[in-house]
Length: 235
Length: 235
DNA sequence: TACACCAAATTGGTATACCAAGAATCCGAG
DNA sequence: CTCGGATTCTTGGTATACCAATTTGGTGTA
Image 1 (cartoon, chains in turn orange, green, red, purple):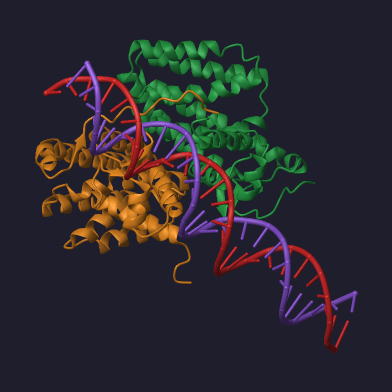
Image 2 (cartoon, rainbow over the protein chains, first blue to last red; image 1 turned 60 degrees about the horizontal axis):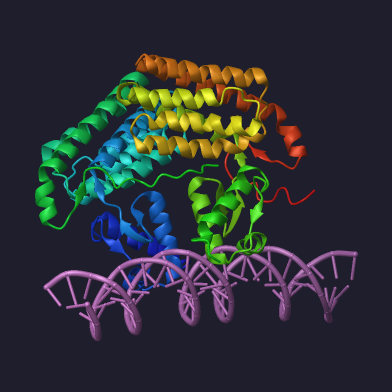
């Protein structure tokens, strides 16, 4: 069973294309365009689009579809959400996680240490936060963090990542693990919150500064999302 | 057939059926079954199922679909998530919300006061939390709360809601608004957290106690993890 | 030139036919 | 009656035809 389902494969392909900016933020997508581009029929294309939509990577634009624009306001909102969820999660983790789980996280972190490989470092950075949230034992919190990291993933290809900055982020992660080891939930939560806040601030500063240049590369960054249509009915 | 989109209508119908327990938790769903039941073709049925899946109301079971089972562990996880998000949101709201917004929320609460009408009270109860989160100015937080309330909505048809309990919940909501009026974010957050914790505790206690009885009515409540495979198929 | 109007093309929405995999059922051998 | 295997049914996955609504382009008129 090499191709169990075309949908999953197609979904991954489109998703990757969005995350790597191969499909530019704000770009218009047509079902038939994707159909021919990825060589699949409309049914799996539609399924992929709907899933991508629920992940926030793709959005409806009137009747059609667009790649979700990079939205500085959304990035800020994500940081706030992450701060709330991740700090609560780590507080829970300090109480619930087994020593072995914490050590496994420490090991994951250690393995990402050298950060020589850009892509590897990027991926590991997001994974750390998801794994950390997982230690809370609360699957929904972990899922929320994963969703947030997904929405943020595209910015990682833009952000400046000096060796110092990466080393710094790594050290902050390590401090969190250390606090976890000592079962100091409050400290761990504070560290996580500060880390998220700082990282976000750097990111937003960078994006704001570079907005003009990035636009020159055909990359639009909006400042306040196109007003999501308000709906009246909520069951 | 003039209706702009059948999908939206079908989606609402199925969603309502799930939320009202007309479609029982754990029940197996087939695309063709829904197709004939709701008189639509498979395409919109599949779209609705995928959307419902992203809302957590429907789930894949192997190759097929089931209505998401009521899961006490998930309910607990939702409470933890809500506590994290809503308390952070209300803290933000205390700083950001306009006086008019706060008054509008107070009015919404006031209008739900008599709670004579069961269904109205139920809906308003969930709405309050969503509107409250909206005052944070963080759309993603509000969306997270809305999602959590959706996942919890089915329990409201089961829960005992004595007039005292409802009056009590209403009073707790009111205390939050009062704290908001005074721009006391810390107190508002503490009140929200306590309210969520208490409500959840009552709910879980009730579900645990009544689990046997509810099962007698063909309603399965799982304690952990998925997969109750086959349950209520007409007794 | 500006503009109104019509025709063709494009698009998402919908319906449906076909497929392979799995489940259920039937039937005959023992 | 039991068991094994073949047949049939059902199911989700996929491909595709058709539709209505928009968009697009062109064209003729004032």
